[in-house]
Amino acid sequence: MPTTTALTPADLATITAFAGLPADTVAWLLAHGEGRTYAAGETIFEPGTPAEFMTAVLRGGIQFYAQQGGQRDPIFRVETGQVSGVLPYSRLREIKAQGVAAGETVLYLLHRDLFPALEDSSPELVQRLVAIMNDRSRDQVRAQERDDKLRALGKLSAGLAHELNNPAAAIARAAEALAKRAAAKPALFVELVGHCPSPEAMRSLTGLAVATPAAPLSALARADAEDELATWLETQGAADGYCLAPAFLEAGVTTEALAATAALLPPAARPAAFAWLEGQLTTMQLVRDVQEAGGRISKLVADVKTYSHMDRAGGFEPLDVTAGLESTLNMLGFLLRQKNVKVSRDYRADLPRIRGRVSSLNQVWTNLLDNAIDALPAQGGEITLRTLREGDFVRVFLVDNGSGIPTDVLPHIFEPFYTTKQAGDGSGLGLDIAQQIIRQHDGRLEVQSRPGRTEFCAWLPVMGS
Image 1: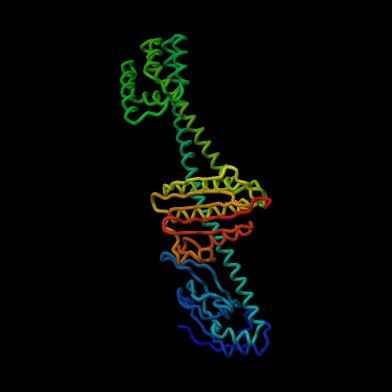
Image 2: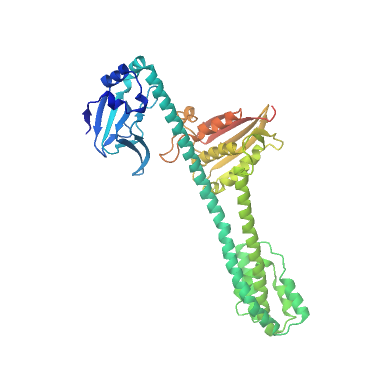
């Protein structure tokens, strides 16, 4: 338990905000406030309790912790000479974090009910305290914005890492298989030419090696075709017909084509010829797989470049709204596929350009889409993006069929720090930031919601209007 401590003018002089105050103001503070001493590690504030006191740290400090999921994480610290807690004109009503004494700590406390009397006694001190409150609010907003950006970046990075992992793994697997095929080719070639096939036979065989990939078959039709082809290959002396048949079918090489080539080859050369052909066809398919996977990686890199616009100066410029929406969808592709979200597009073809900052607008689309994805059901979710021109404005609609926004929440969703998400899942700044960005573009952001349908609409002025 804390102990009451008698304080002197010298004690209050250690507080930066109290420095240089008239003697009568210091006397007023001592007469109306109180001193308390806390042992090291003793709890000073508990989350959820009313915020009642302005708190100045005379000695020691207060370490604040956020409690999430049974863990206690340090968030900020109030050092000797600093003022914390409730300040004049503050809207703080509830303690949000746990405050613990960092070493033996001596505090000066002034109840918020005395703030009007303090303003009458010392307007100068109240101005100092309000300035501290403004600085604290600004720092908190910056920290929350940074945390929100890091959280969004984390989601995008996780999705991008997953997207890159698949083609990268495909390239690694194909490279390993290509190495095995390349190592086996010399022996197959030696065995084939050892039977002295005719030039005509070699031309027929190599002609099959450049066959065009066939159209995919149904699972049942493919199984029947593999059985038939494998049986025929084994009649030609191939001991592993079931290993060779899939590559021939994939490349569109039919039994008839193989039979025509086989007729030109000595019977003893046919097993080596078919094995060589299978190796060549598989090699070409692996090369196509590598090309496809490499193209996918290149597209992902291009999507990141388009989304972040890291090749642009970052100022206001003519923008195609549709391109920004599409690059954001590409960046959130993994999250959309995780929930099997159906995305519908209804873009006006002749939509005029707007003048804006593309990275900022992409942040708006990211916030709106991320919130929509969170609100969608596990299956059957749908998001519709629509654009149109209305007068001097481009209107961008984002509609989802999620749970909707409760009527008591709807009036508050653009308020800073207002959130209905669990602790750690959101700071309540995403929509506030989105609204501010749209206003910086001389536009406005609106929302309508009912169960099963939530619609956000961004109004952005047409360039030159």
